[in-house]
Image 1 (cartoon, rainbow, N blue to C red):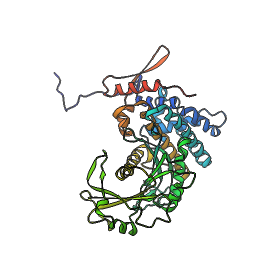
Image 2 (cartoon, one colour; image 1 turned 60 degrees about the horizontal axis):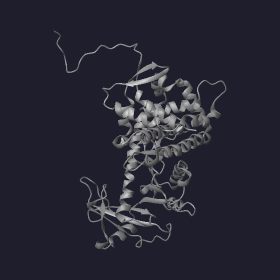
Image 3 (cartoon, rainbow, N blue to C red; image 1 turned 90 degrees about the horizontal axis):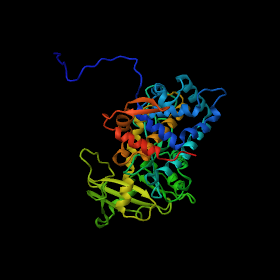
Length: 459
């Protein structure tokens, strides 16, 4: 009779096994690439960087790195996890080949970035068409959130400087399309900037907005159906003038700094003018109120049609009040050119901009925790790789998952779906992945693969 020692069974470990595929759940991402046509599109876009008699296609090399990042990698060398499973991912380039491609794309500068971004925009339009009612533009409108993010550097990289938070690194501006409460979000712009770049630099916000709009289907690149949201960093004359330029006519919901003029206007609001604010569920929120002050401060130098809406609320425990707060109540303000709708609904719409923080948090776990390369041009290519990875992590749930599973963030997708192992079986001249029935989310994987297989092939 043997005696068990400890709480877990003891197993023997050895190498040399075959027939099992690790990260087999990543077949969901591979099928998303195939059904979206991203593989052929990126291959055609990067054809100018393919040298004669080259074995590896530059488009596939870049996609392999993006897949590695989507699976949790944070540097170029992590593409090794794909190289180990050639039956699932095909031939994968060596580390030196990957590095040479990144150097070549970085040396090409805007030409290479434009090729990648144009391809992403074209594929995005197809994915949104395939998604149908699950598309973020299914209702005829779309929301783009712009925000800054600090990326720390632990070595002397190009353009890494001291930041406004007294750290050291870079300060990119990023933009995401909001999928609403039923989904996540997808990246549409990533502008790399030095760490000392200003939070409210209007020219950078304009550039980021231009990059974001170029990623949308053509009918959404101008007009009121496209809403641009930012925090108070975007509340500048130049940025609001650009958004309101005749012929562009974009909708906006932009946070505004509480200036002395706004504070004085708030003091003059009669008590009956305040209406209850809404919570996330659309019901009245105790201890929070909203009001409009468009007619009080002088807005003659601001764009025509701009409205100012303020919110006051009891601060949560531990919150630090500011000098501009009122009678122990926290004040916030935003500008919008939306003419219709209750004040509480407009304020709730603006407050949902906080979902962008979730998108940034997910980006940090998908390659944005640090910039692994030295030169700025190389790290800008790395940002495009991150964007490709985040695109796939947004498109796959949009096309293949349903219900609560569509809201799973990258960490949960990696743990529950992508990390699942399977047995590779060759029968009838076909390769089959057999997932174990013991895995709690095998049914989710099989259902998702079925939804992807039912989609029409590109072209």
